[in-house]
Length: 176
Image 1 (cartoon, one colour):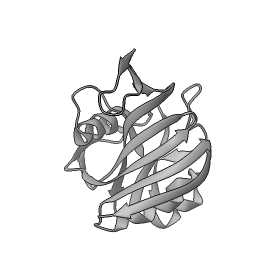
Image 2 (cartoon, helix red, strand yellow):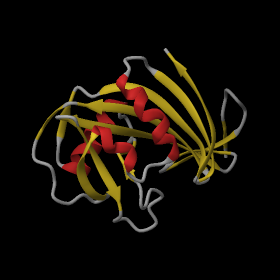
Image 3 (cartoon, rainbow, N blue to C red):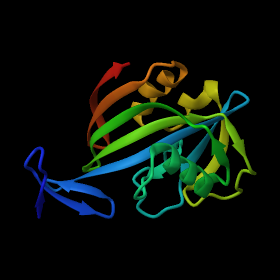
Image 4 (cartoon, rainbow, N blue to C red):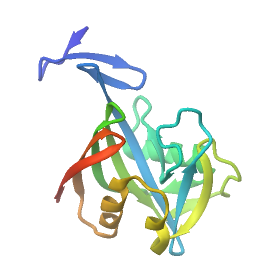
């Protein structure tokens, strides 16, 4: 086991993230593609053992080595929806502690410019353009109801959402 030089914790690199004290730190992105008053969402219903099964989410996923948040989200949106997004806007960083046993560090972006045709089928689930004023009527994670309105502002946010399994316990946010 390697030890983190900064905090002296035991740390091990895994394909899914950095493992510290038997908990994974996972780096990921989340993008809300916007067009004509609608947001592209995916209803997660295809992958076995999907931690988001039965929920509506933006598009995104885990980083690959050497990627910036923008590179990661461009790859993920193309893989999941067939769209090539340009100039994604970084809004903030969300930390989901102990979400189903791991800590997720998620860079949140939006995109309004894209080319390509929307895929008829996504490996993640059903893709749908949802009216912006109806987003919160869908089955979302509790934290989504809190941070989605922040995307309307130009302030950068850094937030921590504390979870026990899949139940949110509380949150804290800073705007910059």
